[in-house]
Length: 206
Image (cartoon, rainbow, N blue to C red):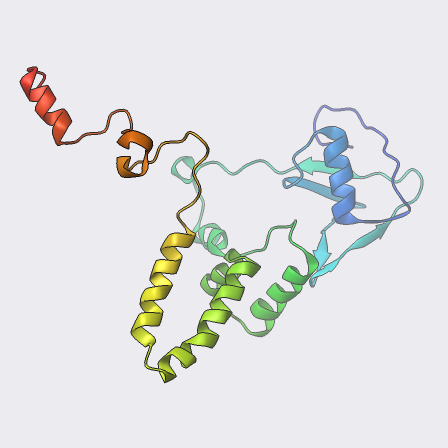
């Protein structure tokens, strides 16, 4: 049963199913947003996981679920009456509900047991595994560079490596913002340089 004017509908599901998979089935069947979908069974809200472990439920023939779509929060500049607790809750870090089980377990350990602040959790979970591998490798090689008196070179080399690894790749036929890298030194339309200023002055456009 969907909250609203929609009529109740039927859906065949396995006897034992993960809450996450059930939400996905309902979202696909009813064309509803998965992230905002909430399920209520026998008066209690269903959660995808608990303590980092996936939650399973058992359903019988004819069981009814209430389906609700959480509305998007309005922009803060038009909100009225929200208090400091709501604002602080927005700043707290929570892994997305689609996160894998090991991420939820790691979050529970870091947040509940080690009591790490939210800003640290943001930094930890915002980096990919590949980025963490580079960070660990960098700190592993740093003492070696210091031992051989190569610290400044190591840091400068790291800076150049970060620059070159983040240059990106141009598609075929795409012009660079710097004409020196383009064929026949072609410039982007609207480029302002000394030659254009001189041309505009001579033609009286300035």
